Image 1 (cartoon, rainbow, N blue to C red):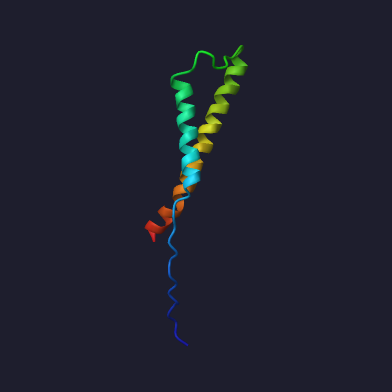
Image 2: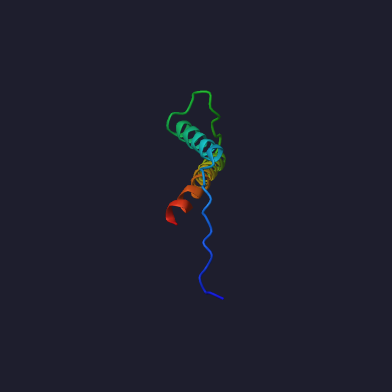
Length: 81
């Protein structure tokens, strides 16, 4: 028996477009609401509500970044091989 490993072909990987698109839409919306709020946007009545709204925006931004990275990761794995 020989010790040479079998060569398996690498499957072509494509980016997951819906994850990238959804992540970019969420990032754009969060930044747009943060930098240019609409006059009829909900306003916080207390500091606790403001902290909750800020934490919600941060959570949405982190989730959106994760979506973009997980959508592009198959392409990065292909390039690194």
